[in-house]
Image 1: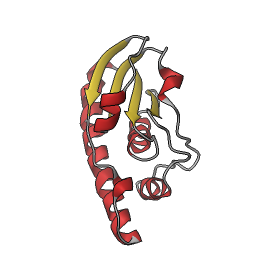
Image 2: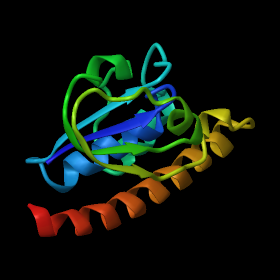
Image 3: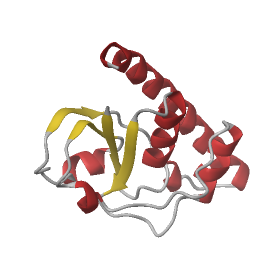
Amino acid sequence: MKILILCTGNSSRSQMAEGFLKSYNPILQVFSAGTNPAPKVSSHAIKVMKEAGIDLSNNKPKDVKEFVNESFDYVITVCDHARETCPVFSGKVKNRLHFPFEDPSLKKGSEKEILQTYRQVREQINEKFQEFYVQLLQYL
C-alpha cells in the first residue's frame, strides 16, 4: 500500500500523519510532501511527536513535484490549501481523500499555548489516521 500525504509546507501536519501511519504498520509505503515546502520540519511538531514516541528529527520537507510521476493507492490532503493547489498526478492514483486539520504553525501566543495547539492537532491527526488505517486493514 503506497500513500502520499500532502500539505502546504510539509513541516507539521503531513509529517505527523506520515509518522503515525508508519508507526501503525511498517510495511506501508508512506510519503509526505508539500506544495510549498518549508525549509525544515517544525521543531514544535518534532517535540510533540516525540512525546507520542515518534521521531521526526531526521525528516525533511519534500516538494510534491518529486512524486508527480509516481503511482499511489491513496493521496491524502491534510489542509485546504494543498487540496486546492495539488498538481494533477500523471501517475496512477486510486483514491484521493481530504482530511483537513488546523495549521498549528499559525498559532500565536506563549510557547505553552503553541505546544498545546500542536498537541491538539497531533491527537486529531492520530485519531483520523487510525480510523483510516482500520479501513485499510481489509486490503492488506
